Image 1 (cartoon, helix red, strand yellow):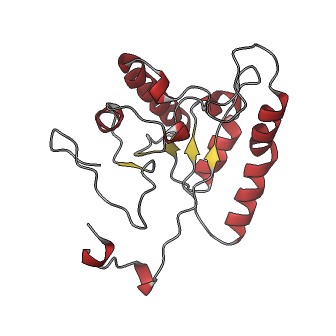
Image 2 (tube, helix red, strand yellow):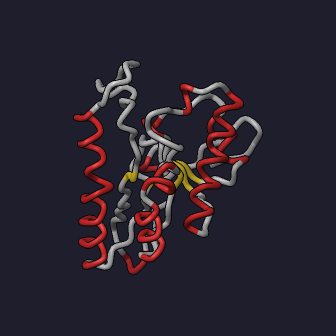
Image 3 (cartoon, helix red, strand yellow):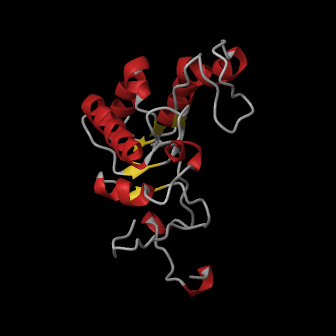
Length: 186
């Protein structure tokens, strides 16, 4: 629907703009590159440059972001690989303490949903959400796919797993519904 034909969104306190802060909290193994990044190879050598750039966020960056947002009383909605639960559980606990709403973001960014067989995709989504829920105490209801990568089954699989909204479809200034073939919508 064209934006000028939609109902006007009403934000709290008469605000004219909403800003959604979504830091990606991701784990990348040193042994793998990142699909589609130019940092990918099947060679099992340390991908130092790709890993160091990204792991900085888990060791330093996220803590600085949390400090600044907390100082200004701003809540975020981080997207989180479930591997973070194993590798950096203190980050998950800090997100919970800050009252942040965690979105699922695959198990790792080193394997996207569109690189999996259909049964693997469904199982991977379930594992990712279950692991985040086990550590955070709350099952995510939102999702951002690693690399914004989806298959023709992804939205159905996400709805079946309890996801209510996705952030993959960065095609508009406002939230919108995505109707599925079976009549359900995200």
